[in-house]
Structure formats: C-alpha cells, structure tokens
Image 1: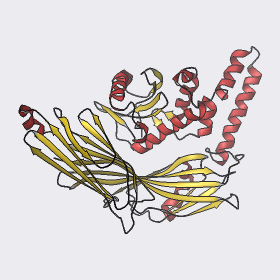
Image 2 (image 1 turned 180 degrees about the horizontal axis):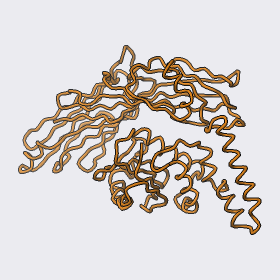
Image 3 (image 1 turned 60 degrees about the vertical axis):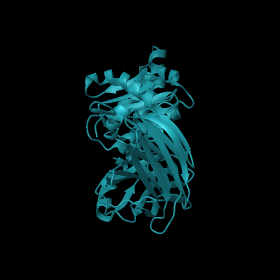
Image 4 (image 1 turned 90 degrees about the vertical axis):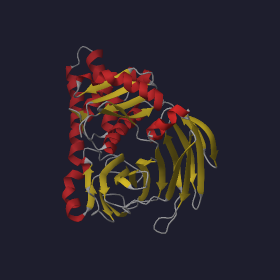
Length: 433
C-alpha cells in the first residue's frame, strides 16, 4: 500500500504539514479538496463514516480532530481500512500529544510533526510504528525538543548530546529485542479486549439483484497487560477468508497462523488493529429489511422507504446509528414528507434521514415527494436515484467469525479477557432506477 501525499490542514485550509512521496503537483489540489470538505463534510460526523473525497483520478481519505484535518492522497488501489488505521494512528498521537489544543499549538511543533510523518512513512509506504515512540517525538518536552534544547541552548553540547542520543538509541534497541511495540517495564491493569469488526460492502440494483457483496473485517486488540506477554487467539473459522493482511507484530509467527490458524503475537501497548481479512462469495443477511419504492407521477417523484427489523439465524439485534441518504438528480424540489421516526435534513440534491435506533421487531416508514418543472421531468426520470445506508450492529457477526479462545502466556495469573463482535456498514448502496 503506497500513498502519494500525506497532509495535515487547519480547518481554514492552511497546510500545517505535508510529505510528498510522488506526484509533485498533488499538493496543488489541496485547495479543491478543502472546498469539497467545507461543502459536503464540515459540521458532520465525518470521522465516523470513513470519509473519502474524489478529485479526478485521486482519492482523498481523511479524518478530523478539533480544527485539524489529517488526510492522504492515493492514486492506486489500496486496502482503504488499513490506510484509515494509519490516519487514526496519526490522529491518536496528536490527541495524546496535544489534548484539547488547536492548530495554533501544532504550528509551534511543525518540525517534530514532520519528523513523526517521516517515521511513519517510507517513500509513501506506511510503516507500523510504536505509538509511544511517535508520542516521544511529537510531545512538547519530548525527545526532539530535548535534543534541540541541548544543541541550541548550550555551546559545549557534544558530549551531552551524544550521551542523550545513545540513551535513546539504546532504548530503541531494547524495544526491538522484546518487540518493537512495547517495553518490558510497562505496568498495566492486566486487561485485554478484542473487537472483531466487519464492514458490509453491498450494492443492489433496482430489482434487488446483488451487484457487489463482500465483507472486510478487522480484529482490534486493546492491550493493558504488564511486561511482555504472548497472546494466542483462536478463531472459530478462518477457511472462508479470501485474503488477509497482518500487523507486523504477527510476522514472526505467521507460520503458526498458516499452519494452525492461530494468531500468535506479542501485543502492542494500547489499541491496535492486528488482522485484516476479506470475504467474498458469502450471502450477507443484515438484521433489517430495507424496501424502497420509486414512482414518477405528473411531474412528481414519490419515494417511500420501509425499514423493518428482522432476526438473523434465530436472533434479533438492535441496529444503532442508522442513517439513510437519498441522492436525487438536479432539478427536484422537496415537497411533502411523512416520517414516523428520526429527523430529516435537506442537502444539495439529497436528503439525509437520521433514524437513530431500529429496535427489535420494529418497522418505520419515510415517504417524500419531489416536484419538478414539466420540461425537466423527462430528463429527471433518466437520472440516478441512489440510497446509501450507514449503521452499526453490536454483538452481530455477518460472517459468524468469532474469537473462540484467548490464551495469555508470560502474563499475570489473574487478568481480564473479553471479545465482542460489531458489524458496520461499509459501502452500502441501493440503486432505485
């Protein structure tokens, strides 16, 4: 996975930091990116939706923090979730280093932020880097600032500077000896939690036929264990994975997974995505039924959505954070609406239905009417009417992939281990015509 450019912008569009790995003119497109960000994403929960802006042949995935935008420019096919994991790593480092701070504080630390970006990327290829090492680079009072203080603040600095650098380098070597993602001196609360998150990518045509149907999953570990423990994670089924990639901490024992289908690794400290997988050729049945209806009548477009909760494999689930976005052709004016639950927001050539929770055994309905001029109506009928769904279902596994057992070696005798499943919408689209 290679990117063209990584960038950090303020919310007024100012470039705070960037690194260009290829495509020297890509930086010139950032004003256009910022214009689209303001138009379509500002004021929304964009960071919860894995937002991506397309400009010509390039994609611009990004995340936001306070008044900061962190994004990348890519022009080749990449595992999107893996790239977002890298963006969230940068986000987490900045949050930890500058809590409740604005872009003005980042401006005072651009040098160390640039060094951090250089540590993460090698010619555009993200390198998994230990979070606490990155924080030591960026944080005010961190290693870079200490070195600068010694170099700039005193004349007779050579001996002290060399000593400080040697100590830092020795620390890095010590990290590599055990695992480059944790230190043996770490003392934790003896807890480890796992999330198996599956993103559903589905596209349906106007007749309900499936055009795209696949699952992109990830396994996250939140490790708060002391010392250098070794984890063994047993999955209930792995033969359905069409492809997978792993965090670097699994590479030393990747043969254990390939031979026994067991994830064996020394876990990084904190929260890390350790395993990505893709499943194709599987029938996806979400715990809801979405029934759209589109009618063209006398210069009017009538659209109705019926949303019904339904059980899956004999079990019912509450669907959370349900959003439905309807995109319509240019030239339509929103008229009458009927809605039993949620709120409706009018956007440019679209409406956003914020449903909230879809409770067990419930069904809800939305009916909207659009009008147009007579001379435009025939053109509008040939336009695209698209619906996109966003949702979260806790404790639900569409592929039935679950963690059966977790063994901890070289750890505390008494510790807490828990795992849960979460299903989320990836790219979920229904074409109405």
